[in-house]
Length: 386
Image: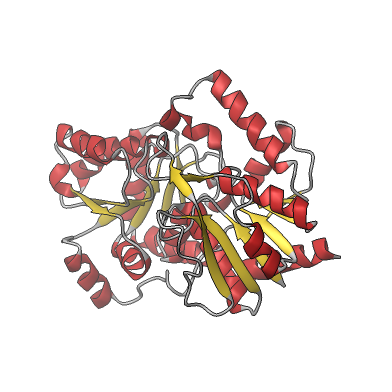
């Protein structure tokens, strides 16, 4: 098949969860022999084929900085991709974002008369604080625009049932199917021997036990709840470290919170890491914690599970679909630092639970392997083309 992928976010310009899912999909489909052309944005739109991978080309559309949100960029949906797409002759178009590049995908699908698949990745109404629209009208408008966009697609894919249900409740009419996010279970794997684990800990400056959060350091992730829980953990385990893997707009605020609570010396901010370094950072830790209420199907949690980490999470949205209580971790009460601390300490203090939950995480995450998810995606494409 000849597949055109459209996304407002794509590595290396952007490295969030949506960007990584779009990249993994493009890479995996190309490796399976499909011809894949990606359309996205970059600071330098003069680059027309930025890929060394066989069967994969990446085309950059002219864009400007999206001043209202971080380092994101916006293109203009006026047909910049038409000439490249006419020569490419796509069998199917797949859009990963409903913004400027996503609107270009809708235009192209209509113009070239090919099926349009849309993946809806997250609860956009949880991110409105970034653009000053975190109020009832803003949330209603966000859902209205999002549902209106995806009603133009022939098939909508959602990584979680909770998001699919929410879209239907907000007015989605088109066929919706759950397709989980995929991860590289070969890159993210458990460390079996203690010697390797100890080397990793020394590399990251950890003497004993450590717990981690990984992802965007932003308000909607409720990382402050994890930091507030940490002093309670230190009362029982004074040498414990908390590793915050990632970067984002709340980084300085979170550092100040750690200082205010007197735990700054035990909190490690790694900054943004990627690939092999990210895998090693996760493997260094003993438990993964997230208090986020906005997650749909977070790659961060799946990658932590793939690395064999037990999970302590808030039972919110997509997290309730990937963590199994007493199988690979515990659910903590939402916005309850004391409960987060109690559940985390229960795992850390029990070698039996650590072993059981580690094996449970790795076993559950195999349902998210790239091989399984790509096969299902191909099947959906073929069904549409019939």
